Image (cartoon, rainbow, N blue to C red):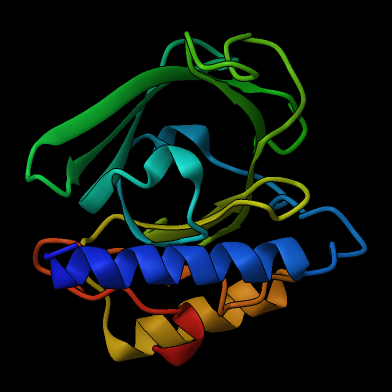
Length: 196
């Protein structure tokens, strides 16, 4: 591999995957926020950090999710990123509310993706933290195999990074398993959140 950033990313993804497979499962499922204002949650979010997932290995930078409300139970999900070859990649799916009490637990599906092509299914998207001003959020699945730090802004201050790390750890995650996601105007490196 000639691209040093790609070589670093592959090494970090491999290390994170090995640690994830060796990590014991947390005792309790990831808890949702008590109440999510779905209207305020709509719009574009930038991924600042995440546990690497097989479906996102082609994403080099500027990973985004854009949500738009379809009806009381369904949200259109548009995920996009810049690839390692500087192209663009994207997928469109649906998020269906599984928990009308909090509105913060959903089943996300993508047509044509095996195991994720049904609109109905178990919760695989939990909003576990939302900032008071809806400026950033922590989402993941109940077992914490996935975790994503989403932000309205592509960048974060040093203080915000410390807040993010603290919240991630308070929700039962190993912060070393989440890697920073390069964004235009934000961080350019890929490193474990526990070192930020």
